[in-house]
Structures are given as C-alpha cells and as structure tokens.
Length: 183
Image (cartoon, rainbow, N blue to C red; front, side):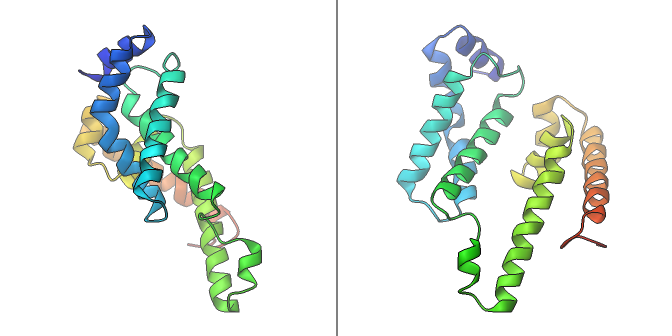
C-alpha cells in the first residue's frame, strides 16, 4: 500500500491504514530511534518508542500532509528518541557532572553541546522543504536520488537546495559567538 492510500485510510479512521503504516515503516522508525539512542537504550526501549510513534500517527492522522508520511514518522521517531534521552538524562552532560571531569575535557564537552545546540537551531530555521531535505540527507543518511523520488523533485533541485542550506547554515553559524565563530 502506498503512502497516499495509507493516509487516506488513516484519515477515514480505518485501522487498516495504521496496520499498513506499521508494516511499511516499523523498520525505518526503529532505525531512526536506534540511531538517536546510540546504544543507550535496550531493544525493549526501542520497541516501546516505536510503538509510541505509531500511536502518535493515529492520534495525529488528520494533520499529516499528503506526501509527508515518511518524513513525519522520521521526525516523530527522532523526537521520541531525544525525549527518551532527556528523560533519562542521557543526552548531554549536566553542569553538575562537568565538575567531576577535568577542566579540558569538561570545556570540550560543553563546547560540543553548545555547538550541537547552535547547529540544531540553525537547521530548525530552514524553511520547508529545505529543512526536510537537509535532515533526510545529513541526518537520516538518505541518498539524493531517494530524496528526489520521495519528495517528487529533480535531483538537481535537491542538490541545489542542499547547497543553499549549507550556505545559509554556514552564514548563521559564523555570525554566532561560540564554537563556530569564525569557522
């Protein structure tokens, strides 16, 4: 069943749409979550978070735009993974923990966290579809041909949007004080 039919069934409240989404995307959603957790969660954690994504799909089925199902699922899966890490204090180094680490290491960890925060802010500032293309390529490791096919764009358009996105991010990050300043 293709995404358009899955979304049609979901919007109609047909559980077969949810079943088809689960069958089609469980592996993808699980991989996104596993990538987020990076061995900081058990297989059971990944399964539970994957189930949460599909519950969220059902609850939000009326608000998902056509042609965006895979991207929506990927974003929700990423957010589920990040929420799990935050809730379990596995995402970043807390200020209290920095006191227990040597000065040079602590400074590098804090700089890395600040760099990550600035980068995510910059990526979040991209407009659609540039943000989705950027995340698919750099974060979900999708190929340009796959992105072009899924988003119904020409390959050259995807390449151009990636280049413009990189330029915009570089400009934004160079203006920021911190780890990227003057890069």
